[in-house]
Image 1 (tube, one colour):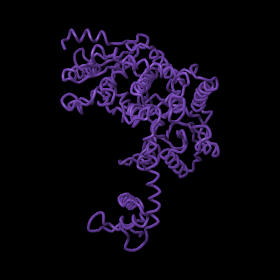
Image 2 (image 1 turned 30 degrees about the vertical axis):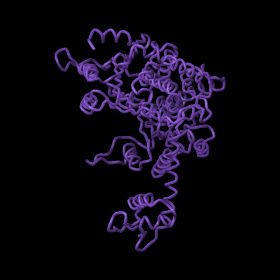
Image 3 (image 1 turned 45 degrees about the vertical axis):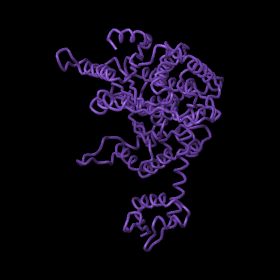
Image 4 (image 1 turned 90 degrees about the horizontal axis):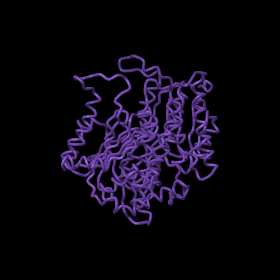
Length: 537
């Protein structure tokens, strides 16, 4: 397409919100001129569904729940006075708790001020706070933060090595002056029964105990009222308990206590964070596709993948502070949209795969394939106007490092388009609490709109529950296998499987895991690996 035609297309499909200094450019997507006209019945349906959701309708039909993350940044929208009060009071409690920690009114068991945070959660209970901490963090933060976001024992140990002052580096020098005795632990689990989070909590309790520290004097719970975690925290006299609501899903919980508590403790401006999200919500309630950034974004997803997710979404933020945004969006987009059935119960296997890193790192990693390889994707560039807050430094005559970053973004965008690769470009003025709120709200609403366009429930996650059930079954099998082991020549996986009527492959993997981690389980090599014999030694 000639440059003059591209300029005309840019003018037609460039949307700028002057009050937010935010823009979305869809001109490098090759949709036909009548695309939005043909999409009108679907987009009108999606606008109506969003209005119903925000008014308190049952928007998660599988779980018979309302969906209320939009109320978190504008409590006046809440369908009842009770919900509005709950949201407002929780925000006040979060601010008061953080202020009391910072002032020393709330201290650790030894009377010292808390200086560090350990957040224990998984999925949406950790990804949001991780992204926000990385995006906004600096050496000026009031408290630093660490995460348990898995059930990996080695991962726990690595975090403890960073916090624990007894850890020693390879050169024999004591590790950083972090101190477990001055660490505040936030345990986040909606149901209180999430195994990964529970394991992390128990590991932390055990570590605190080895240091002679009472865990309850360091712990805060974020969970549903009446959950197992809520009861446990109350019984053990934890410092505080904050609510999670049944109308909030983990992947949209960052503007609830889940994200606000760590943000407030780190010293970030939670009011501006919520205000940014509320501002984007307001702009994307406009029932005009051409003026609605979230609907434009959702429509481009629909166009690129033909409404079936046939192309992957590559997220390329040209800013180090946004490096975790693609990871955050993987859960928000893929857990929301990756569904086997539509709302009518028909098999559709919907979803959009998301991946990305950051520019210009990507140009030395996988942009080569994006330009010349398989055309199974579309790109979203995320541009940040402000290069830095400190004075610019010229790396060449009249050229700064930030000029290069901008040049690489625009150059890559042009090179991809010339090679038939499509892209959307989003721009924000700077990375701060307000604009992180803007970005998160934009994608939350785009996910909601897209789900309506393809007629799926964006707010359940049956596939996740299936995986949990399968894991529980395997752990029960492990107990049965352990009971069948005895001293002596040992048994093969197949022999044990027959004795308990189990799948021999499952038994084989359980035995190998036990032999690698339990010093009492011995393995005697057979002629073939599958003939290995396992016993207690």
